[in-house]
Image (cartoon, rainbow, N blue to C red):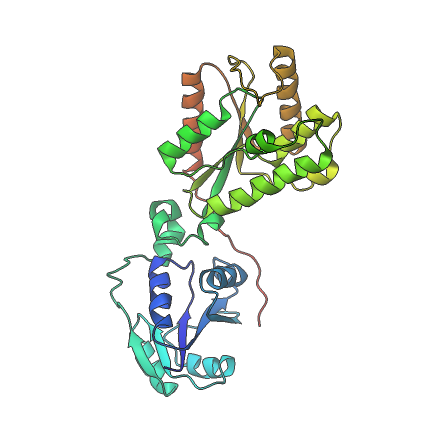
Length: 330
C-alpha cells in the first residue's frame, strides 16, 4: 500500500479527524500527518502536535509553520510536502475535494473519505467557539486542555467525597477520589514519614491525569496536593517545601467548613471540634498563601449543595481553551 499523507490544521482535532486518520491507517503502510500552522493560529502548533502524537503514536507527525496561513487548498503544499516527505508518496487522504489536484501534483492516488462529515458532523471552528457544547466531539487526549478543575478541600467529615460524587453525577464524571484514604487503609501502622505524603501525591496526581481523559468539562477532585501539604503540617508538625513545590492550582476550590456533624470512621484522625477548626484554619491559610481562587461552602447539606452547584454553573459560562502562544517558525 505504500506511504500516505494527511494534511490539516487540526485546530482542535475532533472525532471526525480521529476516524479519518484511523481509516487512513488501513490504507497505507506508513502514515505521515502534515500539520499546517501560522503565527496567528488561535491554538499553538506545539499543543496540536502533542495532541496528534498522543492520539496517533504509530503515525509520523510533521509541522510546517509560516508567518501567515497557507490555505490547505493551495498547490504550494505539493512542494512543501515533498520537502517534509522526500520518500515516495502513494496516497493522499482527507475529506476535502482540494486533495484531488494535490494528489495529482504529488503523483499519488487520492482518497476522499466522508466529504460531508456525515459519520461525525463535527467542526473545529464550532468547537473552538463553544467547546463545552461539543464536548463529546473532542478526543480524550484533547479534553484536558479545555477542562477546568474544581477541587474540594476541608477537614475530615465535611462531605467532600459526597459533594464530589453529587457534582459529577449532575454535571458529568467521573470524579477524582481521594488517594489518601486507600493509602491509609493499607499502610503499616505507626507515625507518618514525610515520604509517605509524597506517595499520596504521586498516587493522586497519576489518577487525576487518567480520569481527566474521561471526565466532563469540569473535573471534580476530592482533595489535592495542597490539602496533602496541610495534612503534612497536621501529622508531622512542620511543612514540606518539596511537596508544596508540586502543587498545581486548579481553576477553583470549594472550601468546606468544619461545622458539620462528625461521622465515626476508623480512618479519620481529628474528631474534636477544636482540631477540626485548627485544620480548617490551616487549609484556608494555605489557600491564601498560594493566592488560590476558592469559595467557602457552609450551612446545612442542602445549602452546601446549592452553593456548590452555583459555582459549577458559573464556571461553565466561560469555557477554558488552549489559548494563543507565540510560536517558533520552522
